Length: 347
Image: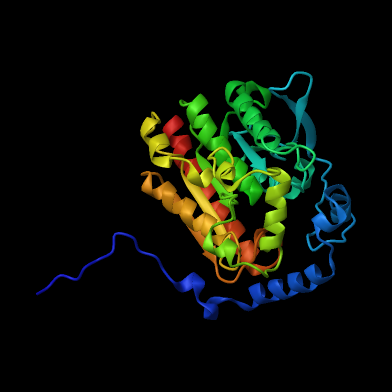
């Protein structure tokens, strides 16, 4: 009897089949499509004006809540005379924290604020007994590359070196979209500069890992809800003005081009930290997540990728829609698994 030839890589096609897009996801896409038709684009009105429109509820994103139980703080920067603002949420039960969750917000390197994450910080803090911290990194175009990513790295390195600042060690890092870019860059930099530190979990949500925009899903995305190629081009230009494709391929800017196998080999742990990749199949940045998660696995490291049929970019921000709630549940389950496993190893 002949043996069948089997593949060394197995991929399920189910998330990519149109028949698997549920009614809730279709409703979310319809809602966002209507909203984006009337909302201005940030590069048409200017970054500062658009940021204000977000807080006035005049864009397609929900107005972020600011909770009185969140606190403002600051961490030192490599730049003399300036600090990095952060938002901190500690568990409501008042019991000691088991670690720090470091959040890096999205927004195409241009939009968003550390003060926009209160709801998510509260959920993480209370679900996992963590101190949740969001970084107020500098934004483009006012402060282009490498200002924002340097702020994220500085904050993370300080938290590793000074766990007493919030009374707990840095254990988890996560971010969405451009925040996913900064998360990857921060993880890789800490592996070089703080090799004995290891994250228990890394959360990468519809990450923007290739600023050359040469991924097929990005190149073909002429029209899409939330973001499309034109918007991505403008985000990249704001962050890296006038730079060539070759320059933007630098791994310090596009983490997809980092040598992950080399990083894993040189780590005393022999691998990258475990990572959860989350992305919708209608996201123009889909291929960024597919490629990066595959490279993560090829390095001998653990990567879990969760794909959501028909879901657009940043779908997880729209709580109340089934697809967003499903993604949140998967994230919480991954964190519970990793934090429980690593806690037992630490004790």
